[in-house]
Length: 223
Image (cartoon, rainbow, N blue to C red):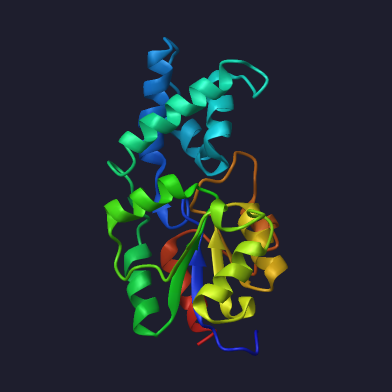
């Protein structure tokens, strides 16, 4: 265990703190219908949400960035998403009571996401989660996004602590790599948007959970 006292808990956003997939399912399939393409199963889209808008276009249309239609389709997807950003999105089960316990024990909490600020801010504003995060780190705030550890070092500066005093929770190996390389305690969120064939138990996280309810007992070990 870390010798320094635990000071904060950081979360990845999509697939860890928030279940944003239902809104992505709507907008990806809306875009497919606009292009007179068949819609995709919810589960197929859900698995790709953590990988960003480019991955969703590749998934939906089977094209890459070299295709001249790629960027216009991606921009249309982002426009649709901004219009539908918090219709069905909500915290994963167990997250809201977890945040309350974190606050009750005088721990700070925050977000480290690869989701651009233009979407993270309106989403968080719409949901108005309380207690509010003490730090929200988006790609625009760092020179190198996750899996680089810079996000955790910046979180430490925001929260007035060392990265070793932070628990970082994420549903992708990039989150675990980010936390481990910064010296943070890491928890793999297997309940999130894990790619087909991927195994969160193989990410070298300190812990792996299948439900957000399993996070607080881990945190308690460091209090």
